Image (tube, rainbow, N blue to C red; front, top):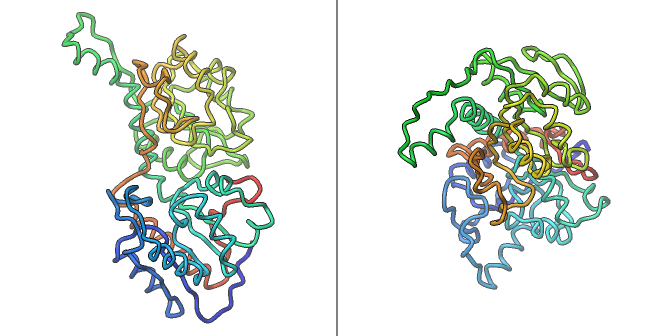
Length: 355
C-alpha cells in the first residue's frame, strides 16, 4: 500500500519507552512533524531497549486517560500502545486518524495477528517492522552457536563442572572450509552469511524467490532444503513463523542432515518440530543445538530441552544489544522521511499472511 499522506502537519506519538535524545532525533526529521512524548505516561526501561518497560508500572486512571488521549491525536506511532496486541487493537478501533505504526520487533506479524483485527481493518493502516535492525546481533549469535558446536563448548563446560581432564583428547572442527546452510536468506540470513564467509565457510541457503546471490554457493526454495542440508556441517534457521514454515524442520529434514551437524535457530520456534529435533540429537544427526526461540515461550519447565547436555537455551534475547534503541530510531527516521515523501515503506507486515 503506497502512502498518500498530503497533510501539512503530521503528529507522531511515542507509545513506548524511549530516550529523550532519540525523541529529538525524530522531531528533527521534518518541520511538519509534531512529536507527542510524555515519559511520565511510559514505564521506565529496566535495561537498554526495554520496550515494554517495568511490568510493575501502573498508570493512575487520570494518566491512563491522558495516555490514550495523546495516542488518539496522532497519525503515526513509534511502537504499539503498551507494546501489546491488545494495545494495537484498541488503537485501531479508537483512532480514525491512524495511518502507520512502526513496531519494535523484527517479526511483528505475530503480534498483529494476535490483535484479532480483521483484514479489512488492518488494510486501513500500515505496520512496519524493525527487520534488519537486529541482523548483526542475530548473525553474531548464529556464528557463536556454530562455533560452540564446532569447538565442543558444551562438553568442555561439563568436564569443567566435573573437574574432569579427559585422557583422550578429542579434536574440534574448523570453521574454515566447513559448509553452512542458512534457511532464509533475508537480511538476517545474509548478515550471517557474511560473517560465516569471513571465517572461511562455504554458504548455501533458501530464499522464497530463488535467484543467484553473489557469495552464496547454491540457492533453493524451501522445497530444496533437504538436499542442501545433506552436505552441511551447520544449519541456521532465520525464517519467520508463518503457516508456510510451520514445523519446516521436521523429522524428514533432520534425517536428511549430514550426521553430526550443528543446528542454530534464531528465526521462530514454530519453524522447528521440537520432538524431531530431540530425536535428531538423540541419534547423532544433530551434534549440538543453539536455540534462541521456541514453539512455546517462555519454554515450559517440563521441556527436555532445558536439561539436554548438547543444547543451549537462550530466552529469545539474541537480538538484544545496547545499540538497539539507536538503530530502531534511525530506521524509524528513515522510514518517516519516506512516509512524508509518499514513498513505499519497507518491511510492511502483510495483513493476510502476517509476515
